[in-house]
Every structure is written in C-alpha cells, then in structure tokens.
Length: 159
Image (cartoon, rainbow, N blue to C red; front, top):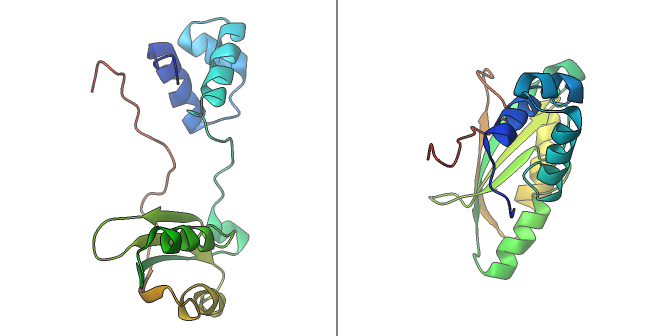
C-alpha cells in the first residue's frame, strides 16, 4: 500500500471489522468525514489489499458443524515443492484455517465438522493417504472461548 494507514483509516477499519455492512453514512458520522470520503478510503483499502474480503462470520453449531477440530501436521518432506503441494492440499473448502508454522509441526489446521465420522473421512483423505504427511495430531475443541477474525489495529506512531 502506497499510503500509510492514518487515524481515519484506522477508525473505518475498526468499524468494518465489527460489522462490515455498517452503512457508509453511519461510518462517516462516526469518523467525522463525508460519505464520499469514506467510500474512497474503503475502495483504496480494498484495492491495496488491506481489506482482503467482506464476509459473514457464521456460528458453526447453528449450521450443523458443531465440532471444531485443530490438527497439527508434520510433513515427511520439507522441500519447497512438497510444502507447496501440502499448502494446496490444505486449502480446500473443508479447511477453515491453515497456518504454515514453526516448531515441531509444519501446519496447524482448523476445521469444523458435523460429526467425528465426517472428520474420519476428511482425515483419511488429507492425512492418512497423503504420502507427505509424516504424522498428525487431532485436538477436539471442548468450548469455543473466543473466535474472531479481527486484527488488532495500531496506528504507525503507536508501534
């Protein structure tokens, strides 16, 4: 992004992270800018990749995905081509989040499923039958204490 994020952008982003369907006129009133200025700033933030997407956060249990699972995956081979292949494999629709990490594991995955039978089928396809998965560990979430996609925002002079 060519332009640094200023206090107005910061305020707009804070509002959008809490509710991305907040009307422009409401955002404009809250940040003390014109509606047109807010619209231009949001467009710039989208074009520069600061705002990657606009989506709804859905409660998994309300749509029949009551079980949240975290999976640690250790790759058998760590060549760049192998890692690229695993990243592609772990980018499917059944994976909610995938992180390539440091430490004992190479990947941390988050999934939501309707049943353990569903997870068993997914794990067979993604892990057991994958020649580049050395081992994986499944962690079943007991309670979702906090789940958000909000990114903490600091103004550049706060860092």
